[in-house]
Length: 216
Image (cartoon, rainbow, N blue to C red; front, side):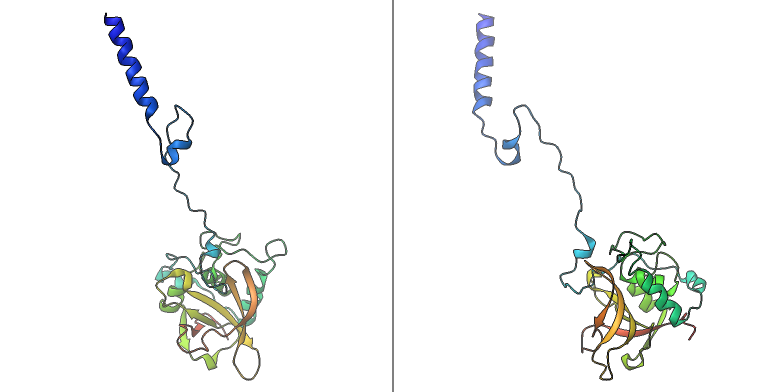
């Protein structure tokens, strides 16, 4: 009798379990499988983070530089700064250095816009970010009309690091001063020499700055 009761209970339990309908991800699992914990990963390309295609791609949020390191930035001429800026245009086996907020290039500088400007200016590695470039004594504000080759045009007042940016001024396109040539490390494309009008449009958040370690 006990064996009959045990068999009956087993049969009923099997029937109940067999009638359960699985939903969601568990429904796709083979019989007897348990769902594994989902892996939390971030595979988004930093360079594609900005909604603006010109954009620049933003920069690291925690890349400030200790105040004491400012004294270690050597004097540099404007010509040397531009020579250094040109290196990244072809330093990736003949191609531009790719953009990244998280990686440093083989020379030790961060591969975002402010890391690139820091490399060109020989600032301490891996480079202060745009907020630090603007606020921590690396530069001094100037008027856009005062820009000379090697000065910086910086947007540092955005709360979103993907919309802060810095470019290296290379010269006015023409006497009208409606646009200028510049070097930058840009989202999606990496290092490039291009034309911009940042800072020339009212309210766009860009302003001109002169690096204090420029020797001329």
